[in-house]
Structure formats: C-alpha cells, structure tokens
Image (cartoon, rainbow, N blue to C red; front, side, top):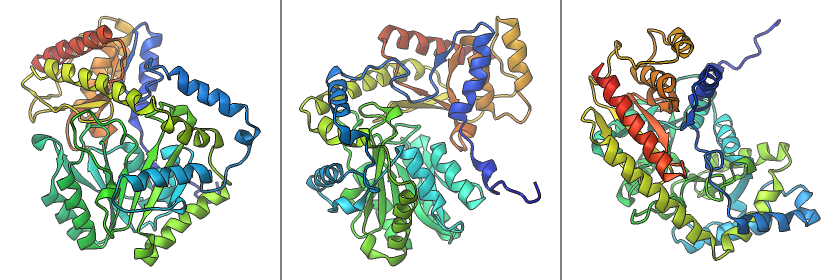
Length: 434
C-alpha cells in the first residue's frame, strides 16, 4: 500500500479463548476427541433454553414491529423497564435516557474504548478479560495496565498496587471491574466496592463495571451492582442477556450511564457513544423486545436460581478434587460459570510433559510449542494433545502475571463433568511430577 493502513494498536487485539480453537480443531482432525472448556457458551455446552422462553420468542416473531429498526438508544419500553428495575434496587436513580443498547457487550466494549482519547487509560484487573484488555490496549497502542486480583487473598484486589499505579500513571482516567469476575468467578464484596469508588473519587476517575453475570451469583454470596455504591462518581455499568437467558447468539447488551451531569467531559464522552451507535442506526430489535417479557415472567428468577445452584455444585466438586494437589491455588468461584486454577511459584518447569499416544498429534503439538511459550500455555497444549481437554492459559489468555488456566462449569452431565475433572487432576499430577 502507498500508506500504512493498519491501526498501530492492532497487535494488541488478542483473544486466545478462541484462538486455541484452531489448534483443537487440528488435533480433532488427527483423531483426538475434544472436550471444549474454553468458551463460555452455555448453549454450545448443551444447556437448553426453557420452552417458555422459546414460546415468548415465537410470539414476538408474529408481530411485524419485531422486524423494524429500534430507536438508536434502544426500545423505549425496554429501557423504561430496565430503569425501573434498576431504581427499585436502590442506589443511584436513572432514567431510560441513561441506557444505551449495543449488539452484545463485545460491541459495547469495543466502542467504549475506541471512543476514549488514546491518552486516556483504563486500568483493569489481572487476570483480565481479553475483550476489555485487548480493546483498551489497541486504542492506546500500549500494553494494558492492570491491578492484581490476589490469588493468595481469595482474588481480592491488591489496593496497595492499585493506588500506586494510579499515582504513577496520570493518564489513567478510569478503573474497570468485572463483577462477577471472568475468569476467576470472584464477586466484589460491598466493602471492596466502596474502596474502589473512594479511589475513583480521590483521583477524579470514572468507573466501568462489567456486570454481564450479575444474575448468576451463587446462593449465599452478597452481591450489589455498582449503582448501589457509585455516589456522585461518573460510571458505566454493562449488562446483557447472552449468559442469562442464555442467548449468546442474540448479541444484545446495554450500558447504563451514571452521573453524566457531574462532569462535562464524561457527559461529552457518553454522548459520543450514543452518536457512534447512531451512525449504525440501532441495535438488534428482537432480543430487546424479549427482555421485559421474559424477565417479568414469574418463572425467570427461579430458573436462574436453579442454574446457579448447578454451577455452584460443580464448583464444589472441582475444588474438592483439584484441591488435593498441593502445587495449586484453588478458590471456589462465587458467581458466573468459570473456575481458575493457579500454579504455585516453582511448580512448573520447561522440561515437563504429558505422554501423547497419538503420534501425529504428538508431532503436531511439539511443532507448535516454542521456547517462548509461557509455562502455563505449555501445560495447556500438552493437556489438549494428551486428553482432548481444551482450557485457556492465564498468562497469554487473560493478560495475567499468574501461571494458571481457566475452565468452565457448563458441562450439564454430572457424570461427564466429574469424569473430566478427574482426568484433569490425573493429568496435573502426572505433569507436575514429570
């Protein structure tokens, strides 16, 4: 080309959660069956959408209005419903004009960071969800800045490091939390939320809270959304239906703006997000129409409670089995449907391997593993080749400084789930002793 056309931050767009699929597909072609534990898609893992939700969808499809554009910000009746439900929860009060719909939170995340001034940085958790960390880094053309979630302290944020980085990096303008967290399943307690809001107020920052799993918190865990603590700090909360209904293919998410009037620059930024969506006309109409219909159904919240009870039971089982390995740090998740395993310092070595019985698979995987692989990625590749279990390494997959991996709690067959967790334990035992 006569001029360079690629954005300078393009190399920061990394999503190993899906990139490992290509490796797994090639291994599957060579005869190794795959157990897909990399992507958080309940439907792909075998969960079924309740018939009563499908009936609501079918009924909505009979209405010609379903096939029309929605208003740019989203269907007014749906935004009224969301605002009312939000206000009933207490905390900051919003109106329908504080809600903006997107084609899934992936769309929202992309626009939120792309609309920031390139010098305005957002600090996020480590481990990081790659859609956030990659989009933020790409916009800034600089590595994503993180604060640690401490596996030695139940995944609580390390506030000493967070505050030091806020002081050392004057370009940091926002703090990101994912609550419940992906990949750890950590739920931010109220006191932790208050401390984050206090830091934002002290340093004149705004807060982004990704709450896509807010209705998938395990029973007995205290949880409140950002709106309960935000006070007069500018903020953006993010929600959607992809994990709840579940309807990941519906691509329907929304953001809620808090305290636009408190800061003129923040208000202008929020308006830029609305203007960017206006250029696209609107977001998908069908799932927007279904939100108040499904959520008002008396069966909805009992349905979610039953789902989260299953995830919690699987988490208990996995923590019990994998917790027998002394080289691992294990914390049971408190929400969402993921679990993260961290290797203790010194547990992994460059010489460790698993036996791969399929010769073609062994040759293929050995050709991919290079000296620059992180130790946890090396384990993940050997695990995939030897057993077919496809998980995601923490360091490269979640922009983390910890060696570890994430797997899902989505396998609906209890016997199959327990079997693969036992295979995972045996593989870990063998690998760590090799």
